[in-house]
Structure formats: C-alpha cells, structure tokens
Image (cartoon, rainbow, N blue to C red; front, side, top):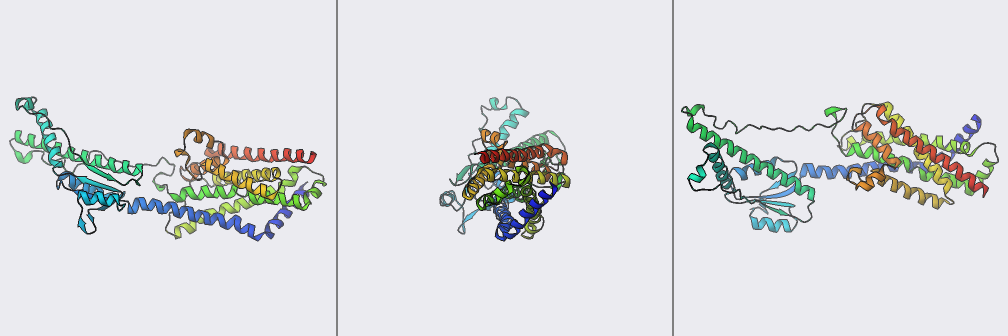
Length: 431
C-alpha cells in the first residue's frame, strides 16, 4: 500500500510540474490579487484618514463657538478643511453652490451671534442657579438655545460620514457651553469673594475633564492596529487555497478523458488510495501558496509603504490552521472533480461555488455588516471557519488552543468531502 501511495504521489507531482502555466496561475495570481486588493483598500483608508472629507467652513460668528469649531475641524484627520472657494472667502451662498457642484462633500455655516446666544442662555441659567427666582423677579425667561448651524450636504456623501461630522459638531458646541458655564460661575464667585485675585477665574479654561483612550481587545495589546494588510493577506490566501479546486478537478477529469482512470481502477485498492496521492500533493501546493502569501505581507507590501503583516503569538496555531484549510480545500476539489462529468463542468462548478462560499465567508464583505440571516448562513462556510481562525491568531493574539474548533470543522469538512467523493465514484462505476 505504501508503494502504491508513493507511486500516486510521484505521478501527481510529475503531472503538476509539467503544467508550468497552471503552476504560475496557482502561485503568481494569488500574490497579484493580494497586492491589488490591499492597495485598493489601503488607498481608500488613507483617503479617509489622511486627505479627509473635503469640508468648506463659513464662520460668520467670529467668536468662541465659531473659532473652536474651526480649530477642531482643522485638527481633525477626518476633515480636509477649506474656508475659501476659488480664492474667495467662503460665504453661505458660495458654499451652497460649491457643495451642489460636488466641489465639497459637506459645508458648515456658523451663523452670526451664535456664541452670544449660547452665552445669554447659559448666563440666565447660572443666575437662576445662584439666585433662585431671579428670572421671575426680573420678569424674564430663559433664552432658548436657538443656535442653528447649517450643514450643507452633497447627496453623494455617505451617511456614516455625516454622522461623524455632526457628532463632532455636537462635541464642539457642548465644549463651548461648558466653558461658558464654568466662566460664568467663576465670575459669580469672584464677585462674592473679596480677594478677586484668588477667585477661580479661568480655572476650567484649559482643563479637559474627560479623556478617551482607544484600547484594542487583543492579546497583543497596543502592538497591533487593524489595517487592510491584516485582513487581506489571510482572506485572499484562503480564497487562493480553495481555488485549487479548479486544477485539482481538472486533473481528475483529464484522467477520466484519457482513460487512465480505468487502468487505475484495475489495480487493487480503494478509490481513497487512488486520490490520496492527489490530496498529498495539492496539500503541499496549498502550503507553498500560504508561504508565498505570507512573504507578500511580510516583505513586499511594506516595500510599498504599507504596514507589515503581524503574525500574532502562535506559529503552531498558524501551521495547524493552514494545514486544516489545505486539507479542506483539496477534499472539496476531489469532490467537485468526482461529481463533474466534463472539465467545463468542473471549472464552472468549482469556481462558482468557491466564489459563493467566499462571499458568504466574509472574504469579500465582512460578516458583521451582513443581515442577520446572511450572518447565520455564513457560519456554514468553510472559508469563514478558516478566516475567523486567522483573525483570532493575527488580530486577537490568541494561542493555538483558541482555533481548535475552527480546525476541527475544517478537517471534518475535508473528510466528509473525500468520503462523499468515494460514494459518488462507487455509484458512477456501478452505473
């Protein structure tokens, strides 16, 4: 049995080495795919974070609110700040026209007297707090906060961009109101305290009470910032490994068409023994693919200015998961090649099914933005099992034990596919 297995492995290796074009497609095309997809997504990411959303700003307030919002927008990486249009100072009319023509995605207009309106409102509230009934005594009412900031929107702008802009504006306005309130309280206290030099004036002016710190829930702590490389390298590597179904099924169909499969069946031994040589050879091919894809993320993409691929904390986990993924991919290729009757059928069945499984598995679109029904369906995709395993290793810094369930699913899928291929082959031979 060992000699038959070695003979089968030798036969498959020679057939594969003779097809140099097929080998180049197996190894070079996935590398090009990773280059293209990572560069595209990284460019989009940089466009958002470095160049920012083009915003035209009109400050008719010329006071605290307008100045603070202007400073905030200028320092915000989300925005590309402009306060002039074609060399002219921006006005509400010019801004609206420019946004309607697509020159800017968003226009922000701060009206005249906006800070005064907030200041009057806050002052009235502070006076009422310090001296209850003062408004009734003076026959006055609190001035409503009627500041109306106009946000001019290009219909092309995505809703997520607008939410980011409006949330930033609310933060700026709240900061202005808080500063004015503290300042007014300080002025009231200063009038009560005889020694005005000791009054807590401006004590809150430069104080930021609440600060925010972003912490990624990863075993690697601050060493990792998620980026396009961390997603695309494992995702498209898995896609390339499963796409081996096309050359593998083509090899099986070629044996059928040439009649060599009938000579192989005359030899004593099961169908599993006959295809075991293919499985071993193509698993090795998948492992070589994976090493080449890693080299892209570790060496070649950083040469283009992209982040280097972070492999996580467990090389053993990477090897186990890669081996399970390769086994699942080759097992599925054997099943497709056994089911198909012609090479065209095998190519179409294999390519379309892998495209479908990769779309469901989160390779094309992240699963978290899918509808709930599709997320539930994606849990049955072997590409999703593998991708989630690599996410655990690369992004979450997990150890090998965390991906055992993913590995078990992939191994069970590959074994089920091979056993199904054996049953289908037995049925076809009987017919």
